[in-house]
Image 1 (tube, rainbow, N blue to C red):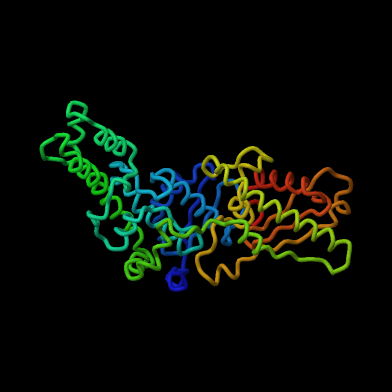
Image 2: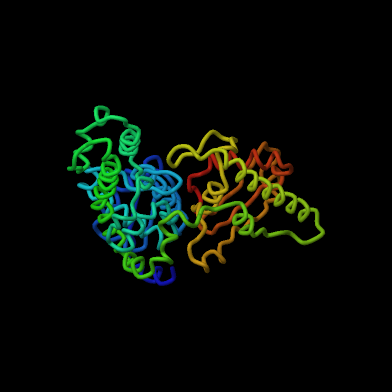
Length: 382
């Protein structure tokens, strides 16, 4: 990661300006039309309608959202990994070259890695060749082709086989029940071979910073960046360890209140992770109704505070990752009697100021933070 970071050209910026509501489609379009600089330069992001100036957090927010959105829009598969969705339109528009560039920038400039590829896809990326013998029907992510394989396997006579579809997959031998395995093998090879041009486009995008060269030179080390072998998503343990509260003097009433709030905050974060196991965030770049903790996980909480929902890739970055927590004891002095104050987040410096008066109990903290995350996700301060 240190070597890759040194390859970023800081002489100018690669500027992207998008609306938060359509990050993927607009992000791809703006990325492709940028002529004055290249993704080799430092990425700078502006969200239209938000006053935040990008000192790092907006870039991480954009990369977090667009990598997740690209995964949903352009890839398919399950828990064993994903493959690109086959699309002649996307190949013709060179979308996957752009996607490769986005993945490279995300890896090198502080965003999340695209570690959702099926092993055979990463093997192709890291070698430039498709190992036909290693691909099996379990590696097929296309739902139509998976269904076709299931129908072939369940067939008990030739009449139920869809011969046109079998021929379209490149099978040229005699079609009979006795040839099931050969027919299925033809479908498997068809499903993978047709993705080769897409993966080649992706590889061309990964050439910036010579990332592709590093992947091919260090296949085993770089595998965790692309394959589902090591989770980089923030969990409660990492997040709690990263909290760095600025406490008042020991023995004071202020310190007691601050310690109680930190304990409530730890419980809140850990409960979010437990509840997040029962349901994922819905939508693309949007949060659910306020106060619904079941729809907020530890990663989304971290993204609200820092712009990113992944654990930093580099060892030094992981060690330096701290979220500074300050405490505001004086809001009643400034504002008089009032109903509620919300935390003030500075995502670029990874700090948050908590209103002590309004977070006296666990239920108050949960309510205030949940509403703040839902309604305060835009970068108004940075």
